[in-house]
Image (cartoon, rainbow, N blue to C red; front, side):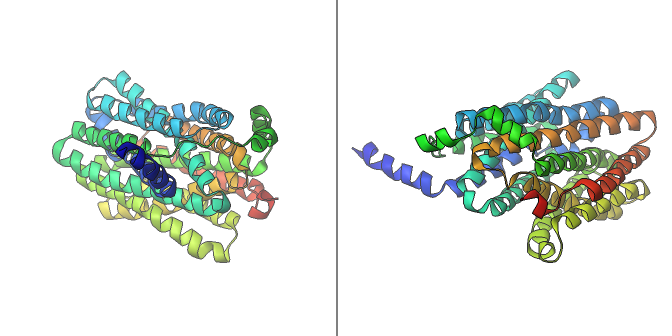
Length: 403
């Protein structure tokens, strides 16, 4: 009797609080993946990896996202189920962190870091599920997702970095496993997916036709391409080899952790700055183009930095421009896509930007081994400069995207 009385109450609670619950899960999802990346390249160098190997390991995280996000988006749209995919993502995040905790073998580190990319690939379904919960205001939903993404990464970067600085890398990896395990348990409280009505199912597009329509959408195509460039710059710089550059200058693990945390904290400021201020006075294309130009100039300035304060300033502004680009390229690329094929659109968007996460650190690591880390940053900056020119020519304005 008690169980029968409690079950309807629990069901009602799950339905009433599904938005907040999913945002907490999304926060823990990123916390499970980001307790250690701020110090990952110095860690890899410390266990004997070359910069080329470090670049490949960093790229492995993006590679698995690149190849999985679109198929997972198509599959989840076909099944019209998202909760099971969210659970799978949390499971892979847990396995990745536990694996890194217990190995120093370069090949196994590559595998477990790549499994972290498998986990991140399921961000498609978390994003699509939350946007479906808030179908009437998808732009606000994108802002919420960007906020919890940044908040989770900021918290994990700072806490994980300090744990690693004081107790060592295994404890930092283990902390990520704890966050993922808590998130996995909370996933079980999400309400079950609602099956589409007969009318919705009959009106819905076949999956492959939906993919074809997505691939003909110029907002999706160009928004995804330039997001890939942003990830190329980010995973070559702030999220890739700037920590190694800082370590070469003699900065401590704690200082590097704080530096990367400031980079992530700037992400929250960027979301507020753009949504509450800049979008009132400028078109989205103008904001994105200028932010790409600033990103490029900051990358040119990294080899000139010779002290902690200068790197802090550079990392702060890199955080602002990178988040501005990723949040609003996602908005430009996917917010106009109907909910019945939104996971496919998000899967395409996230798969394409995954290319930048692979190519960026791989190229930067190879150039750094052949020449120097400073020259590698200059090569990356020239890629950004070319993107600025192309954006002026090809990136549609919001009005064109929402035609």
